[in-house]
Picture 1 (spheres, helix red, strand yellow):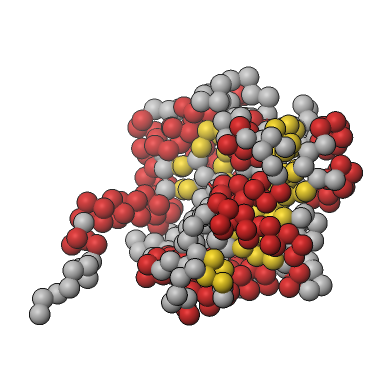
Picture 2 (cartoon, protein in one colour):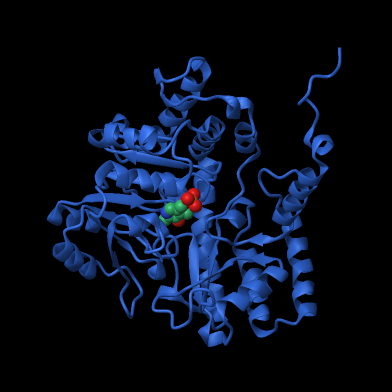
Length: 426
Ligand SMILES: *Cc1c(COP(=O)(O)O)cnc(C)c1O
């Protein structure tokens, strides 16, 4: 009797990939990860999503599957849904009034399912334009959502850089969209779901809230919830919610059948059951008081960092932040967003270059950077660390000398060592 194939550990079977994973762990441990859409999934989430559940096909929904052997999978998916219903259903008198679909492969497919559920090709959709902080899937020209549907983007106010609700109303009256998106990917302020509801009602549009970035903040009650207001809510599960890479849709019961049909069989085949299990674990973790502490810290850290940066002469879009992210206009510091982000990366501070509203520069070489506090808050960093971070960012804005950047990277690494990251073994 030999050892059956497929039972040896990764390091033995594929030392190349094992070593790359180890290096990525090291990178995630040693750097200040400030990409606003990233986080550290817990060890428990990683275990569930790296499990044998990846082996199972289960097209369909619980009790209505197209394959046998669903005894366990049905329980996993129903548990994930029940936990999300409890977590996000809080604004409702009866959380059962919230329908949940956990099968979208990620945030973009979740949004596509909304189009498929409510729109025919070439019908009109409105969303925040990409250059103003919206997402590709809200009707941007290069996205399928801008090619197969008629897209009317709205923007932000020229001086305040906040969403211009009067413009939204005016465009909605003029273009009578079938669907209005309220959701952002690079916007530092609270979203007014109720105001969007009024506008959608005026023109008979479906209101979709895309809370991909802020779902962890919504779950913890530190950002207003669109539940009970929007017809349908989409989200990723891996940003502030801190689950595995995946997507979900929450909606009113009236839309449940249309949404479920759009996800399967409309758009996808078998659900990723290992991801569903990871989402269930994340939903459980997000219902703990420690998650509320984390979410509050995300916001207080963003505010502390904003204050420290402003006092050092940085210019923030809208002047500050209400949520987990800051958009920094680097124009007053005389450095473009891209070279600055690259210099920061060498200094162990990882963010992304980003266009600012009405950016005079090109998208591949814009004026700003976007920084978010979810990942560093998951490590337990606080106000003191935000001050140090602002000082390093100031130093890098002044000098991109490799020796300076490498010295800062060493200091960053030393600080990071005091804040072990969730999920990592280093
Ligand atoms: C991240 C994001 C998405 C897309 O998520 P993916 O998982 O990358 O497909 C959709 N909408 C918004 C607002 C996002 O920020």
